[in-house]
Image 1: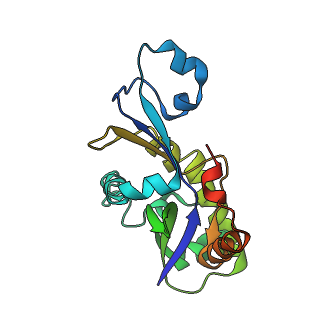
Image 2 (image 1 turned 90 degrees about the vertical axis):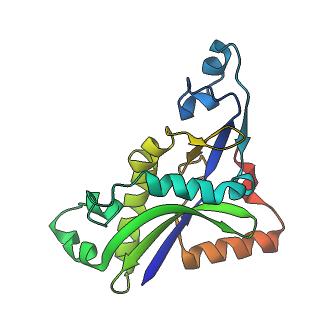
Length: 188
């Protein structure tokens, strides 16, 4: 069975193929001023949706499926003896992006063998959030994704970060639609 967690993403498209900057430097005015020339744009979730196939290809190419034993981020999961049961429930967890409506979101797609309880979900949200901010995601945002237009740098840890189950995410989207406000593109 598949189980998904959704979260916002943000990106940068560097037209100059500078590669002298790390991802965070695009948000640091002093770092930008030190360079002679740099041409880039911040990409919101709507704009990132146009690059879904390219980004997912880069994510897939970044994995060594042999060394992670087909478990993805669950290969590195280890909260202690109490969570062995959770490791048995969640066979694998791989990140990707997915377009919902007109916007791209980060998705952690899990292969599960049985239903997750509330505590399992809480633990996984914390773990995946950590992977996005300091683990896998921090490393991935430093890897440029080449496109015809330039190089995309993608962050799974934007300022407005949250991580939702599918049900929570559906509720969030419905609330946004009902309010008529597009919260998705307020981040930048």
